[in-house]
Amino acid sequence: MTINQSGWRPTMGNSGDEVAEVEGATFTGNRALMLEEPLIFERGSVDVTGVDIEDAPKVASRLGGLERNRDIGLPGLSEPETVRHYTRLSRQNYAIDLGLFPLGSCTMKHNPRLNERVARMPGFADVHPLQPVDTVQGAFAVVDELADWLLKLTNMTSIAMSPKAGAHGELCGVLCIKSALEKRGDTERKIVLVPESAHGTNPATAAFAGFKVENIPATPEGRVDLEALKARLGPDVAGVMITNPNTCGLFERDMKAISDAVHDAGGYVYCDGANFNAIVGRVRPGDLGIDAMHINLHKTFSTPHGGGGPGSGPVVLSEALAPFAPLPFVTRQADGSLHLVEEETVGEDHPDSFGRMTAFHGQMGMFTRALTYILSHGADGLRQVAEDSVLNANYILRSLEDVLEAPFGPSGPCMHEAIFSDAGLAEGFSTLDIAKALIDEGFHPMTMYFPLVVHGAMLIEPTETESKGSLDQFIGALRSVAGRAKAGDETLKSAPHFAPRRRLDETQAARKPMLVWKDPVQAEAAE
Ligand SMILES: *Cc1c(COP(=O)(O)O)cnc(C)c1O
Image (cartoon, rainbow, N blue to C red):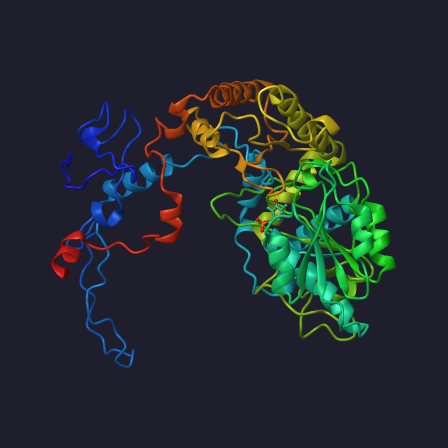
């Protein structure tokens, strides 16, 4: 076991191999410019401080005996140590600014720097949600203009801008459906129908809103089975939640017929719009009879995401659901000024609102970025986004289907993501092995084991922002890895070989997560 100068031990994951046993181990545990970095508690010390501040003057406490009575226990570091700690950690991230990020269903596209520039303009960045309305007319104009674009692109009646992510938007839409049913006294409708291939947030949302979830079967071609759906509709069904294009990467061609059937049976149609990137500027969901759909600004409209970063999930609504939209929202007055409809101002305008979803008005910084993206692309540019994203995904599908099984490949082109299964890999080899080997190739793995309807699914979404050169490199890497998995190359099973951590025990990590750092000296003393 190597212990470096500052006394911390590089850990090499839980694969059991300690540093000295790893071939080519170094004294520091670093591998060339890939630097090991301990926790800040291991790096710093509670006895050290990086700043020189005078003791606070003694003042009478007004905390009523609740003041801290022991040391806070935070590690102190000098400024250079602090800078290095966080810089080293930041280098351990994979990011869209480093390379292709093929996570399906996530639309990890380039975030144009123009968006960032505009979002940082003081007039946008420094407004406060509690400022008087007449001082933030410009910010409201951004919200209003973005809302207008989203309504035009979807051909819907009304929009709720405040939901803060896709899942939050789903909740907004489903609560509108619930309110609409309550308003007409239709309280026996307890079932929401969801395809088996749905993103986990769809059934979770329906259940959270108090509905029971039932699955809609799929056809062998990977689409909703219209006849089976029709057969299930009835007076107990509140509505359906359908993703279009769906999570198998296919357009639901029967969407209009599905909506008509659901409406005829008295239900509502929620569309999960996370895959809007594939159809923006080409298909208007309002034309397909949809009642509510969220739009992930952080997917289709390029606002940054990943790492749990801020999302934004505006929800477009049909005429039937518009009266139930949440507060607050921006409206334009007869004199052209913009006004915020809040609880206090709602009056007779909007008495059926189901309530409020967020403290303020939504993700202002994301609105600014998304509108910048939309305006800089224009209508023709947005259409090209959809076309190029579909082209790139089909290039991947057709370049790999001879080495990886593409379950829906034979039934035609895909939309903006390509899906493969683990059928055809050598006995004992799995999707996980392929994903881990891609890390060695310098790529973030694709989405794996989702959707559940495809065995060992690999869902790849390149997005339109990748060049042919970068797609070719990714295809080359995946062809190589798939070839090794088909040939039964055992080294694949212990990949990644070149990453700072080897293959982790993910079950152990999920079941027994270590969430609190314990000082090893104290922990030992306590035993
Ligand atoms: C991303 C996604 C969601 C959830 O959106 P969040 O913004 O992550 O909450 C829902 N459905 C599908 C199909 C998605 O891809």
